[in-house]
Length: 528
Image 1 (spheres, rainbow, N blue to C red):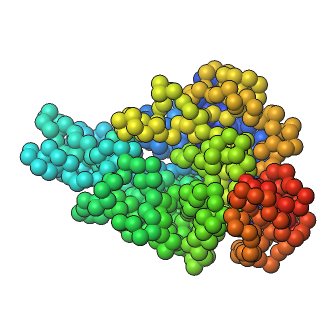
Image 2: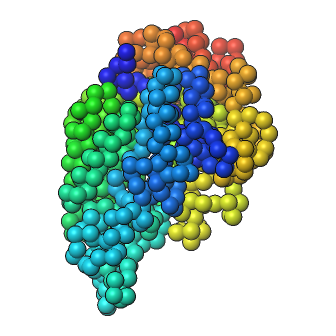
């Protein structure tokens, strides 16, 4: 029988649905493709899946622009396929969590279409943030907020009579209008959506932009001259100028409502995407009556330097300790550069990514892996004509967006699709993926896939992976070593340029070859 709080030490695998496996040969990953690969995920040893949005959508932001949150887009399948996927996953011992996007809808949502057809001040417009403009004839936006994707966060609409009308708020693409969370209809609709999927057997939700939703009533100008059109726009660093677009206190009422619904469904999880750099403010999201877990992105942002990685770990542990929530670790997702590329690319980047995988999997709490991370996939340099992320166009083609880390999974065989699809993949797959396919890595005991499989197995079976506290040891410059408190398990990392002596103990696992009792650069090891 599954534990009620199964997530406290789980390994969760993020499936970017478009890029995992294609079941119908149209070049886009889908739910049937995921069903066909559940055996692989069971073999990998993960406990649960997180599926990115598969709902009805125009796909301007590849599903994060939701037109109907209680149905499946035909490109991904249908509700019957989803039900089969959940049932089959449970038979494989895998839980299924899904994305929710409560900050905004698609501009094709029936609510927004009704708002455009209605007059200013109407109940239809009250579900969103419509405001009159400023300046002469209201020709300027209501405030200076910028979209995370680039450009103003406001778009002006045409009134039903044909004249220039109000402006509506969209913190992301213009096709993603922000919902007004002071409107009770918005609350009721999300509760209906939560219950719809919970009743179909899902094991939980990941809340997109969980620090969004609530806005200050007066929508004040931001004093940050950078506005928000930058890659780290959703990161509010400690001591930085407050950003009125995010982390408004009212958002916690939304999370209490979500948690209140889930508390009627024992064993269900809610985890939030929380781009908050201040430990105290972050901790508020994972209080006992709010989210069970919150993504803390400090490890994602830390360079491959021992002191920086240690500081990220210590901050993440401190941010949840006071409220009793487990820490949540991740090195990558569908919005950020993959670790292999982020840590330097090539053989060096791969060695460092392997080392950081061992560091992450040695930590107490919950670990999220992004599909392809276990293969050591790098970012892909795509030609301009292949780019599909709305960031590319909204930034005036100055920011290439996130497509580079969303290229499909290579499963077997050769190009152009490496077993991902029978057709052409929705993003081109590079020749170097031929050296990283799942089938070959499963047969190679030295592969990154074999390393991650073994690490997950040890994490589940070895008695050293217990307890929620770390003890740090003295280590040479550019290195660190920690032990899970109350156990004999030690994790050591060398980010320096020279080999260093290993801590005492028997080596359980290493991310690369060791050198006569010494830990080489760009390498981590577990000892007991």
